Image (cartoon, rainbow, N blue to C red):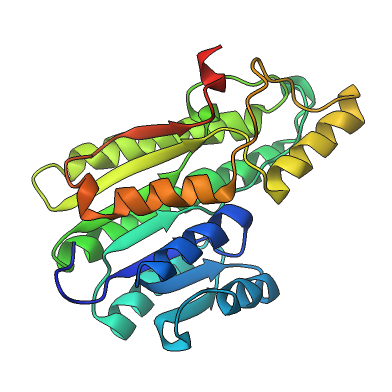
Length: 252
């Protein structure tokens, strides 16, 4: 991690609930931010709400499934700030609530493109920049669906399993460098995505996604605090970890 210099982080999906919370926590800690999202209006609104000087926040409208767009975001961070100390792969898609035999191929492929290919491209282009900057931390936002099954959410679950596989493989490849790769696995979190999933489930099944334990929904700030920890020097000995944030529901 950087010494006395101001640290720089790239965050994808920065206009969403979790992405915005991550940006807010990092801004409050003095990070310079390169925020990426494909929704320009929402990205602008999120950036304007941050507790940071305008010159410390860059906004890039980009699709994480586009390799040149992801590579360009990393190049921007390096050209604009001369370094990259952290990268948070947070952009995600929920897919549909459908049994496997009814799941449309195009939606399945889109869900994997955003969640898996997006994470892969962030790793591919951010890892060399982190090493060139003297080391740093990559954090992927997985899900408790990275380590469990969920009926009628095969696209999302398959994609989040793959995200964790990417993290574990990349973490091993970075052993011996000063770069760390870890994952955060939130359970259901109060965001527009969980509202969308529950709405699809209610329309199809007459109720929200069934949960084994009635643990309270997490808040975006819960995820943001854990991400900030993994980006910090306090997590310097963590590599390949998958931190579960779900109020204990995965234990059932």
